[in-house]
Amino acid sequence: AEALAVLAELSADDPVPTYVPGALWRLQAEDLYVHVPQEFDAPLYLQEAGLHIQSRSADQAPIWDIEQVHLDSGTGLLQFNGTVAIDDEDLWQTKVDIAGVGQQIQLNSIYQYVPYSLDVDLRNWLQTGLPAGEISNLRFEWSGLLDDFEYYQERDDGFFRLQAELRDAVVDYYPPDEEDKGWPAIAQLEALLHWENNHLQIRAQEPSVLRMGASGEQV
Image (tube, rainbow, N blue to C red; front, side, top):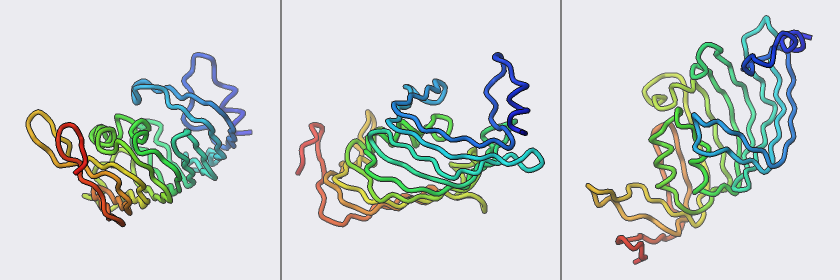
């Protein structure tokens, strides 16, 4: 009843509400394109998408209870649940508390799903630093304000933790540019990845190959 009352007051000229109290949302979709031009260069493609989300009643804080979100982009599978506390006045003050798993995620596709306003430096590094390979057995936890993502390591509240396996990966951690020779890329990498806030650790399980030279030959 609460959700219907809010929706009944909307007109075609009103913006899409970020929160509707007492609503239950269920979605199953295929071949879905999501276009947010201020955050992403191109529409985000999802081969399959499913969600089951419920919002709390109007006498409680504006929180989405996420029973499950299932996203299959064709280049990776991600599932997560948790809560999202919406800040209507400033969405970047929204607080997330979610955890999830992923499989068969292509490294060269990850940057496409990182919004520019979250961390543009991270997005740019993901695009150039992870040109090939796959992530499997991914697990992550994320708790904190969206706007504080770059600063969790400096504060008492908020964290981002991720663990995964890298398969046949290429990691170009410090690529060359016009002013610096950079470091050689690592190829054929089988490794365990651990990422917590601003700290990234990659531990190789087998010998890997250093790529040297402008032509990218392996030595």
